[in-house]
Amino acid sequence: MSGLRRWLSSEWLAVRTQIALGVIFIVAAVPKIGQPPVFAKSVHAYHMLPDSLVNALALFLPGIEMVAGLALVLGIRPRAAAWVSAAMLAMFMVALAYNAFITENPVNCSCFDLHPEPKTCAQLLTEMKELVLRDLGILLLAAHVIWVRGRAADRIDLVTPALGAPPAA
Image (cartoon, rainbow, N blue to C red; front, side):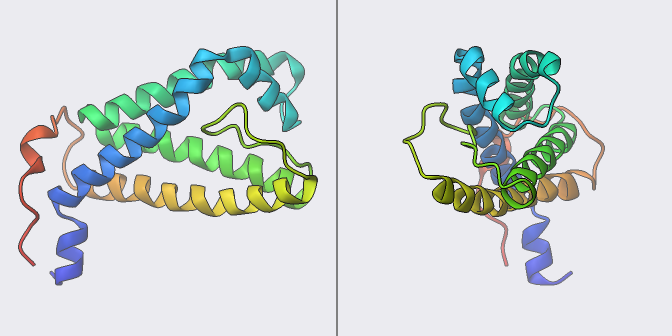
């Protein structure tokens, strides 16, 4: 096994990737859980769901983000949590890309901040295109966790003992 492949598949890196991905989802969920009506308005702005589903998604999605994030940080079924995270990221990327590239509907992402500074339509569209790339990078983190954790059965795996020194090159 090459040095790079060994490092990429190491438990040391997998734990850090898993924790980073989990923290991202926890941080994203907190403002949405605290302000469901504001998040519902953000979801509605994407014009991708029937009005009857907007409130349900605004209530349901942040909880899924939080549970997936906590599972990743705590090492509880990390591969399953990474799959859930990857599915959500794909959904976010589709929503952003559809609104940025196809309909050119400028919306605030509402990923981490429900009260962003006002921006022009052009600024929002540019930001949305950049956020698709950011989400692609986060999707790579999820793919890494899925790949490394796929080598062993999904299990409860507390991360604390694995935080030791990095593997030898």
